[in-house]
Each structure stands twice: as C-alpha cells, then as structure tokens.
Length: 278
Image (tube, rainbow, N blue to C red):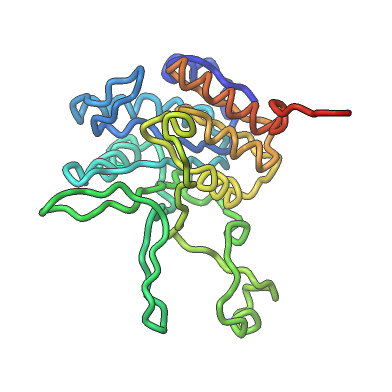
C-alpha cells in the first residue's frame, strides 16, 4: 500500500505511464463542501478545466485495458454538475475517455412489496425545501480509453429471484447469478460519531469501492489508484479484496494520517487490545 502526500496534479506525473488497470475516485464536487485544505467554490469553468488536467494525467497512467470509476454527486441547486463534468471528459474535439457505463449509487430507497408493505432502507441527508426533494443517489461513471473493456458482470451480481431463469437463459451457464445492472443500492454504514468515524465531509462506503473492484474482474492482481484518497476508504476496500498494489494520493495531511490509521486498524484489528493472563 502506497499512500502519498501531495497535490495529485504534481504527484500523478511522477507515476509510471500505463501502470494502473483500475482507478476509483471521488474528487471534490465544486459544491461548496467544507474540506480542510481545498476550496470547493471555484467558478464552474475553472473547476472543469482543473478536472481535465488531473484526468489527463489519470489517462496517462492507465493501461490500455484499464477502467476508471468516477463518483460524482450533485446538489438540488446545482443538478447539472455531474453531466457537465462527464461531457468535459468525453465530448469535444479531444475527448479524454469513452463513457462505457453509468451506474447509479442509491444511498436510500423505499420499495413496496407485493403485499403492500413499504420498506425504507439506507441513509440520506434531509432537505428542508418546498422546491426540491431529498437527494438519495449519486453517479458512478465508468470511463475507459476505448469503450470496449470487458467486465466480470457476475462477480458483482445477484442471485435470480425466479430460479427457472437459470435454465431458461443460455448465458447463465447454469449459475444462479445474474448481472446486477446499473442501479447499486449501497447504504452508508451506521456510525456513532461522525468526527471520530467519518471525519471527512464527502466519503463513499467501502462496499462501493469493493463493487467496482469486483466488476473490474482482476481480483488480487488489480493495480489500483485513487488520486483523491481522502480518509482512505479505497485503501481499505483494496485490503479487503486482497489487492497489494494500491496507490493513493491525498493533499490534506490530516486526512492522510487518518487514512493511514484506518488502514493500520484494518490490517491489525486487535493491535490495540490487551491480553490478560494469570
């Protein structure tokens, strides 16, 4: 695990070309979020140009068969940001990437069962407004160099509800596992103290990163990069998935130290415990 302190625009150029096959990250959203060492209130065009800069470096370090999973959220007052960003990276005279898939990270949802029962699950930040509804999802854009990168769809799949489909469809190969699709319900873990357990204003769940790792399909052989490491969620996911070649870059020293401590706790969960003997 290689956790680096620095600005990704300065650190990415020091990494070898075509050295990663998977990039998973969530950059600042330009929505005025209060980070410790980053001003998240740049004019929109300036922000998009900055994203083009670091994304060009991400492309440089990507192998030809690499996948880049980019998590971006919006706000009710700024709903176009994710779409403006993805157009900046994939459209125009010199597109950096091809948008191969769009996933919807569902944080909270209410469903009605066939019996009429309503079940709510997940977490969301309530909005007190007469104009906007609660925002319960974010985007995960799957970007590649060619648009033709194969995925292990069933590695992140789900069992069939109706088992007759296993034999009905030839592509199942007899396995009770189907593609999950592009709507991923992945709630945040319940915590007791945000300051202690999630001291960062914009994180994603470990399970979200693990889902991207699984669908990428290279398992422990994956070479994973997160240029906006934050408090180390992607590093923890890499550890849980048995990935040894992980690199994370973080501008803020406090967040980086938190990431290192979280990873150390994950790798040695009983290090702080006392063993009492007679």
